[in-house]
Amino acid sequence: MKNNKILITGVCGFIGFHLANLFIDNGDHVTGIDNLRKTYDPIYKKKRLSLLKKRKNFIFCKTDLTKLSKFKNQYFDLIIHLAGEAGVRDSIKRPNYYIQENLQNTVNIFEYAKKNKIKNIFYASSSSVYGNCNTYPSKENLVINKPLSVYGLSKSACELLAYYYSNIFGINSIGLRFFTVYGPIGRPDMSMNIFINNILNNRKITLYNYGKNHRDYTYVDDITNYIYSCFKAIKNKKKYFQIFNIGGENSIRIDKLLTMIEKILKKKTKIIYEIKNKLDPVRSLADNKKIKMFTGKKFHTPLTVGVQKCIDSRFEKGL
Image (tube, rainbow, N blue to C red):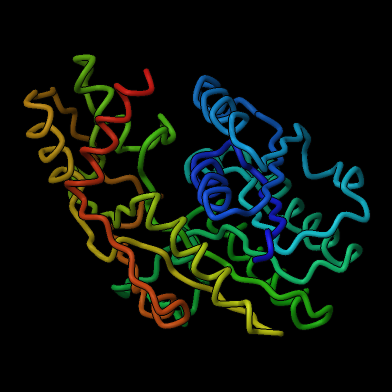
């Protein structure tokens, strides 16, 4: 059985860490790139990296995506491009930065693949591309021309870039529109972890739009299992260009999620209610039919199970 060579950018990020472990578990060799930028508390990336360095078949390189020449003439069976900047509100304040980090670095990856004759790229997109499209569940064939943020706009542009490189240079690609991802060792600035940490530490929680917005929370293992299944599915495909949703397919009101976490922790918190933030879509809900058909697989972790795993992991790993 062939041991595949996988290059993962943003390997110390939340999804990158879990995905690297999955490929290694299946006997593949993973080379991980990360610049270890301090987007949030650096203890999280340091913890993920320390765990990855204990794995066989893992090589780490601290670099950014402007310095890919050091990988010149190296061949990879698949590049998974997860590096980038995520943040809807922050992208409004720093639009140039988000274009550089998300769009220009995606160009860098595709150019590297073109020069080194690498034919397969998976890359992170986002449910934010749907912007103000008020159609639920969201399907991949929706027209996405109503962005609510520079972040969502940058991800839409990355999908167009992927089409260009696929159509002109024959680089196969799959764009992965992640919905609200959560799980162990997740980002501390995401709502799931904010709720858990603030409740445990007796801190107030702010809910925008009075907590009435809906989100499609997606457990990280479901994300990684779908990505790995996509890799298996492309084995017999010489040419492909795809964009897939990966969501939980079960939208929940944010105030209901908070109540669920309070019940699990058996602890109440003080809530500050704020008016609607116009940057936040009222609802998000994925239609996963396309990726399920492509892979022949279905992965779904119930929200109550996923929340409990997040809480348990927080204590096990000292975060």
